[in-house]
Image 1 (cartoon, rainbow, N blue to C red):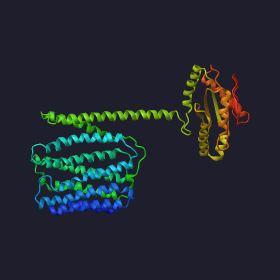
Image 2: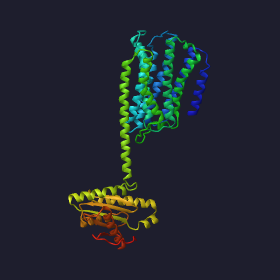
Image 3: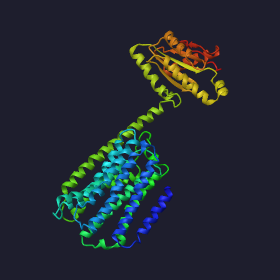
Image 4: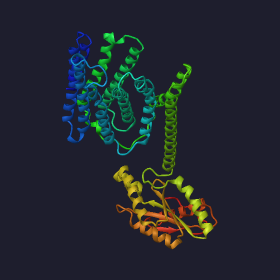
Length: 486
């Protein structure tokens, strides 16, 4: 069905280019393509779970109102001879903006678990830059000169304001997280086509005001109208796409991205104000100084805020890298690098406070045999579950770290030999899957280096393994010959 609809829409748009220049035929053809897009959106929404239909219903209402405005505009021109703004068609045309914005807002809310302030700042920056353009070249001129009524001025200004809302919402959608399949790009393509069509009409209107008779160029008018027909068709294709339900699927944690396109848009938006000031200075008169000042100040604050976000993001990532570098990936315990930093500090604290400190080396017994029997995944699970079980038996002041392979090391501040053995005995009894460990524990003598302390605990560990494993042996406070590990 999506392919059939896309082909039919493409043929209809192609035939539209060669239709006779009859307002009723032209308008009727535009309405047929537009209503087909709105119906396609409703059909696509009906195929979705009920909870996923709301944004598509909002899109369909906005499209249908806009298409109905085409018919009313023809009546105003050909029957009622209403040409001054506002006409009865304008409210219908303008309904496209709030309904599409509401639909996008619902999608954003469903795609993201929380507020993405980075995406909001980027959307606001881009909207502010283009908003200044809209103010200087569209909104302000419409209120100058008294050519139309106040209501007409408000109506004329409502279109660029609606476009700015669409730019803000579309930028927010593009900068946010969530799946980006076919429906996503079809939807954003449709919104982009509406904006392109509105921009083309503004440019055309400015050319007419300057005396260029572009309204009589048939192919130009057909081309601009075709942009809106493409927008209608893309909306329908997005709704009928087989992956349409993924458009509102929740995403994982938001990941701040700043690709080349985003950076280019942010740069362009930030340069709008100084570029406009340069243009007006080149013409010898600054006519919109206050607007440029306000926009420049807003853009400056937004850029500073964005820079602050980037700095905080870099700091968080650096902290995460430091944490990862000091954490064992399998067990989540401090690794050997973290241990080598922690032990000297603990010894210095013990020296200053005059308190004892003990260090123990633990080695899972017959771990290689366990691995060979049950496989390496089972061995990894044993390491993780053992670390968790031992951690529960240690005191809150103790530190358990993975020393390497199946070896672990424990720092026991304030513990003499007997208390250290008692803590380790609890840990030994809690070892899961019927496994055991051998351990050597050494009490710091107040003078030796951390390396010497570890060496004594290691020799005691060798003695425990040589004595039959599944036991804890305290290191002697004298030099000893290292035994071979068995």
